[in-house]
Length: 193
Image (tube, rainbow, N blue to C red; front, side):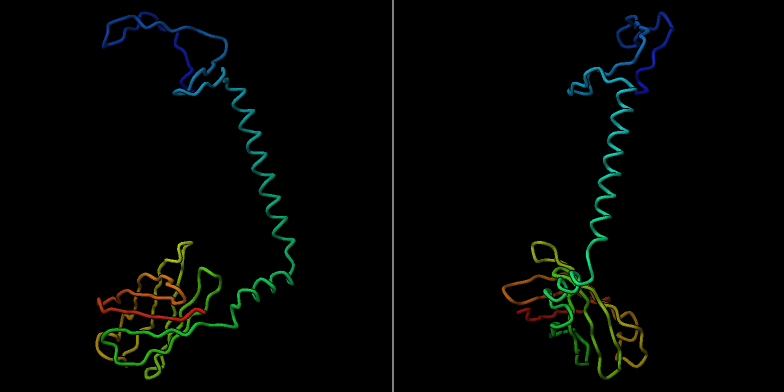
């Protein structure tokens, strides 16, 4: 409300119209309209009062949320995890990684219905690669995988063996496609039901 400060200077003229600008001195600064919204003569005191009420309401609602989350018991958490079958049903995935001469043994472990981990084992070089997968409400999303550097691997795959792309669910299949750091095509498919 700093624009409500008034000047006692007299004979100030508008440069465009050369008309005299009249400043008036008021007891309290009142904001009548903001753009086209009627502010009902909002004063600095009313604004401060409304602001403090809003902050108190926000703090109260945050406390309520914290108290409710603390009340969830361990038994309730176990039943939620059991319903999702997180540990019971890892998804096996079939990978096709262009120019990679090794078989890829992989599975996907979903931590929730929309996110999870991708684990890849390269049997011949004993590498374990880890990645993530995330889906949105439209059953589309993204994935990424990273493998540690290993001089025993073939060709360009000795360093920077990483890949990422998009994923979607079609009927009962989880389908991912993308590229690695060397622009080789990477695809995977997993049956989810």
